[in-house]
Picture 1 (tube, helix red, strand yellow):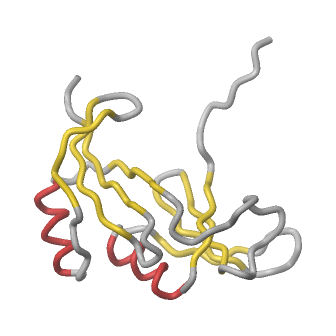
Picture 2 (picture 1 turned 90 degrees about the vertical axis):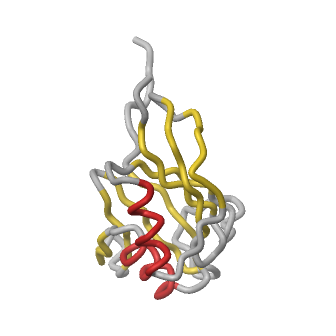
Picture 3 (picture 1 turned 135 degrees about the vertical axis):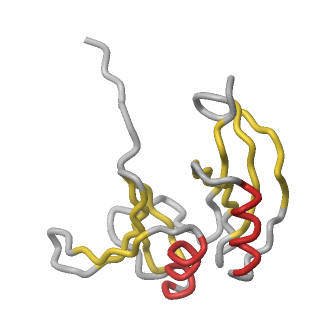
Length: 134
């Protein structure tokens, strides 16, 4: 049997400021902040969207095991949306979030995409994309 993974369940971002990160992803991108308690009994925060989530680690107080070099600002993430990018640009402007680049055509995992780029509070590069017809 050939072993292979089938989907992404969650990823982890190491952040400098938990409150500003949560505000960016909830107010700016429409994710839902959730508290959860893993087996070690600590309380942690995740950002849920679709059937995935982003677990947040406070820089300097990361949970074990962690990335070898857990560094705020080292991520480059692409999120898909069904919304119109013009509407996204207006929404982001209302939230005080600057669009760094776009709209621009890119190559997505399953289809061509049209994307805009912003930065989160730790300067992670965040791509918001709409699938285009192949």
